[in-house]
Image (cartoon, rainbow, N blue to C red; front, side, top):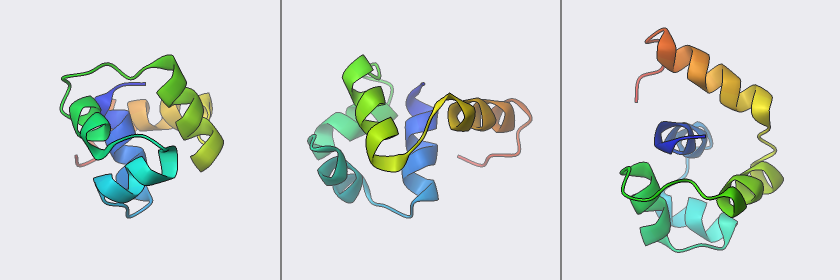
Length: 74
């Protein structure tokens, strides 16, 4: 999972960074840093995203395929 995947999951839920961070029990600055590419997506953050939003590897793979084919406008 990379920064664009995190952003795609957040946008797909129509959430602001603040709301997304609150749902994950992290700070908004953490989400901003991850989405901005200034901080890697930690293992714990991946787990929280999967638990809270039900996103598994299949969703991440679909996002990656869409990015690769330029069909996901981020």
